[in-house]
Amino acid sequence: MDKISLTETLALSRIVYGMWRLGDDADTSPAHVRAKIDACLDQGITSFDHADIYGDYGAEGIFGTAMREAAPSLRDQIEIVTKCDIVAPIGRYADRPVKHYDTSRAHILLSVETSLRELATDRIDLLLIHRPDPFMDPHETGAALDEVVASGKVRAVGVSNFRPWDWKLLQSAMKTPLVTNQIEISLSRLSPFTDGDLSFHQRHAHPVMAWSPLGGGALMTGTGTAQEVLDEIAAAQGVDRAAVATAFLLAHPARIIPVMGTNTLSRIAKLSDALKVTLDRETWFRLYQAGLGQEVP
Image 1: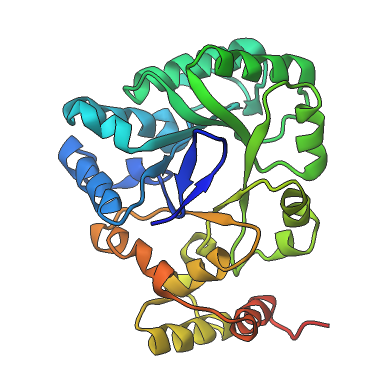
Image 2: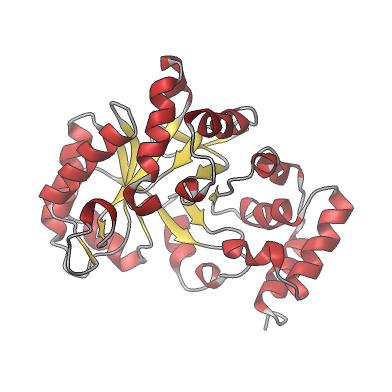
């Protein structure tokens, strides 16, 4: 599987496996988590996307337990992505009175140390600020991100759910380049193709990560024009809906990196089927228009 370079020394696999629902699985044993990791590695999927808040702040620890029991060499085969800044009154923050965002230096440094411990690793390959913080001091936040990179505990930094103006504000206060923005993109959410988000990042050659690339599962289980077109293309190319919906993102010149999340081993084993799908421009627009629910102007 090809990789997308974020820096001279860091690249993510073309498809990333997401850990959002890791804690929701009926089986969270180290052996089962390792089976998921191995199913990804067998396809060339080497990048794993976390966030401290996933699983009520428990998913990183589930992954880390599996890592502790794995051969030490496993860490050098994978890239670990995680996120911070959401503080919700659950899990380790159950005593907090209100959900909020915290991009202070103290919180970022504490989050990095906590994630390193939970994930059983000595480094985070990519740290993302999870949500734009309306109370952010860009100079404090930017300096903190520069600091964790300089320390060697984090290899690269980026953001998630930022609009172009949020990105530019934070980047203006940093020495370290932001390398990616993880945003919601799918056939169910097409606005980034026209609202300036993808255009901004394409202009600056920033690869974009896409969360919920299957529309939160709605594209797989729902019915409608989009699903009909997905099924038609899938049948013609010998794959399933998920592969075609993922290929729709992979085909775009913005170098979109889909973050795929499923707890079913058989589905994990088929994530790379998306790379088998070929979409010419007209077929891509058939999907785009099906997602829009109307013909382009």
